[in-house]
Amino acid sequence: MFIRQEGEKSIATDKVGIAQKWYGMLQLFNITEGTVVMEPEASGQGYWVGAPSLCYDNQTGKFYLSTRHRRPVDKGRGWQTRISESDDGIHFKEIWSADKEDYNSSSIERSCLIKTQEGRFRLYVSFSDLRDNRWRIELMEADHPKNFDPKRRISIFGPEDIENCEGIKDPVIIVLGGMYYMFAGYGLKSEVKQGVSLAEIHLNGNCFATPYIRHPSGLAISADGIHFEWKGKIMEGGPGIWDSQVNRVSSVLWIPPVFYAFYDGRTGINDSYTGRTGYYVSMDLINFHKITVDKPALQSPFGSGGLRYMDSVLIKDKVYYYYEFTREDGSHDLRLSIVKF
Image (cartoon, rainbow, N blue to C red; front, side, top):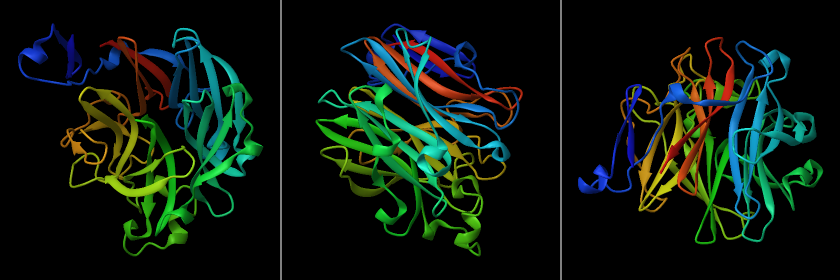
């Protein structure tokens, strides 16, 4: 079954893609048919639940979902990260949480939850460090997600680990042939808007929520998922009309023989917290080609269109898309759309 989104409708045709020599075609979803998986704690701008990272455990059949929980800036921002468990990927029960104080942080952003080939679980957390107001990524490991201990975390990447870097966050990690590929949003001093000081961009503890610095995605590769080699920039905003400032990878989905890299795009003009979803294609995870040049592939019909941090996981014959969605009242909920592959 080949499905593509066209406006607000989905068009389905049996195996037409192969007959037309359309190989590895992407299957999207109808945004009006998503299921709400988690609600924000209150309504209104700044109350958001999302930034999902889904880990499916083949051995137990359990779904484990990492989420970030946010309040308005004056009430705590990204105040908590949680992990919830489910038997069906829809109905979740919280099994673990940590507050921003556990990381000496002003705000937590997206984490990435994975299971290693050795059977261990890892949570790569990104947060703004109170010591310098810069974003960094650190790691916890445990035999089960309920046993993560923030006191035993180790550093993976800080701005000091990348030349000329002002912060790194929102890791997305996949394992390919035994190698760990990490995609992460970051910013460079050379990407700061001319005439703006570094003190200005870090004043509110989140340089990436300002229009003063570009926010591309970079790639790092590791044999053990701990010691990474930074490869540098792999995608960035260009002259496009909708994603000129931000190109931040949100997930990578393999539809043989093609890798699809979804990303959040922004202009930096009145849309600092409202990413919309586009995608690139790649055959080797090194060279990426943007498909959504002129407009996003997915966006909310409300507000400025936020549909961001989309994670995509192929489980058996279905793709599970989890995404943070802007509601009519300005809050964000967490939704799921399932597409049969």
